Length: 384
Image (cartoon, rainbow, N blue to C red; front, side):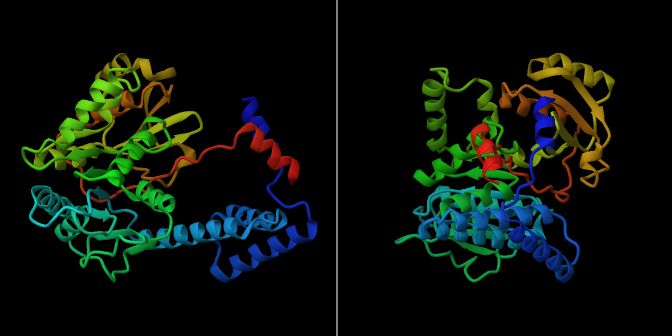
């Protein structure tokens, strides 16, 4: 409560120079006249204030180039994905060096074909190997490419080259933001450092609560052992030494069966739609809420993840009005002790609905923004 009161009394994010502040306000007002009334004007103002603070700080040219390029890349990416924000997308990772015809390559291509049939689109790194196989299976119209400019690798594969849905990134970190923000599922095929990096990044974001829970599946070729041996390492070393919990293993699935891989992804959205926080409440949007008996069972089974109160069924909350209002809400005060158990709760909610959900009505992900540390927050207020 005290923290919320302190936030409400926080000084406006602006410069100490009144003349510059007035010019910023006039610029925002004029831009709204030209572009039409748009939401988020205050956030745009804060971006401008931050940019001018960089000038005041006499930031080095290298720092300014980094910020400028990152902002341009993100803005362009948002505009490319914007028209498709309500279509679910699966990000596919795997080695750029896998040759056409290899069992892993064939499995990736078949997987992509299946996912497009299910009404999904694909995102890949736009390279060759596994990425080219998946892009070819999905086809140009159902594909996005998020390429990274490298000294040796990689030019875009022929399927996505020249397409408006191909984005070329300078920085890995902005590219990763787009993968996390736009993907509603992740499929990983055998690959090198980059594939493992993306897989662990996704799992880390979910485990720490910095990313929305989504289905992650590691796919081997039929009879393959690449990922089955990898999960053996996780079990014996990470789980065996207490570095992850048993429940953390619920955050992903390893399989060499294509039907299982597709079902793991599509089944995750059988009942569950999306989630967000409203204050201290975690809100899960579902197609069908549990009945009274099922709700009692959920409260008994998942009481260990509650910080207080009970799991409840509610209608749309005022602060999320306009966000799939027709779906019931499951609300709880999550204690953040085990995201793996939260994933298991979503699985239980999905078990209440027999048929698969329609492929549409996807919800864009919100990346959980990191709050400023108390020290940084004080510094922001003191410097004005």
